[in-house]
Image (cartoon, rainbow, N blue to C red; front, side, top):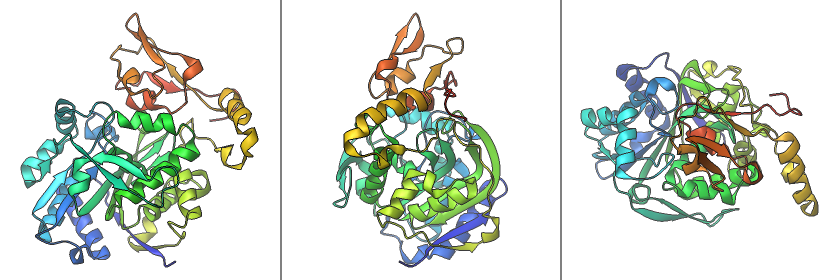
Length: 379
């Protein structure tokens, strides 16, 4: 298997001119002009996790989305849609609020790109899927013939990092995402499902915003980290391999990267172009919940008791700061096993049903849910 090309460009700060210059170099290095033209139906899929301003480093910065649109237009593309299914309900009002907060309205206004408000869904298949072979996805995914996955470089409490592969989880409509968490509560199984989904969506290009990243308890409650890079490649697996290098994480400890290698989706070889010397270990702080998933090495008859031991003794759990909780119900709304209730205007987690997926931590808009430090782990 030949090496996958990944373009790395120093992008010290945000700004439309700087972003367009960087994306032009990425597109030139990867030969994007050979793939697109006036008849192309392009989809740009940013990370719009929640209603949060770009300065929070939780969502893809609008300048990178703007640059992707402009650079596609320079190559003749006329039809460009910006679409994502954020956390929570998939409704027109929810989308409108998130597009506004995340700066996408300005991008659409200034470029002519269209924001998606089609709430319909279609189906994409991956016959080689390990955990799932068919996926319900948002309708624009099915109509596009050129998909640009514009991810945000962040840590993630369940998958360790959020990059090209994890960003595609936003292809699944609305509250169907918590159902997937409930079906696949273990990191290993969930990561296999993400790889299956990636093979079903099949992005043509992955562009990563690593100008301002997030470390610690990502994807929404971590700490902003200045890095000053953008990355781009055709293979989401190769791009995520590069993010491991950038963040200082071993690929063996990131299930999506390790399993992509094991499944033969990526051979592990990357050819860098651009400012390749800039891809150095930036020593990201890991999320406190990030642990090695031991289930893959446990014999089948022992997995049930081993899972109980891991969850009871080793796996960090979400804790609610009742003083900070505003009783909005976002955590209960996003909880896959519906184990969170509101009592007296405050959220409460019923521990016996918690699957440690950290969706509540991810979706809390005020940072009132933290991930505990377990007495037997040192995070």
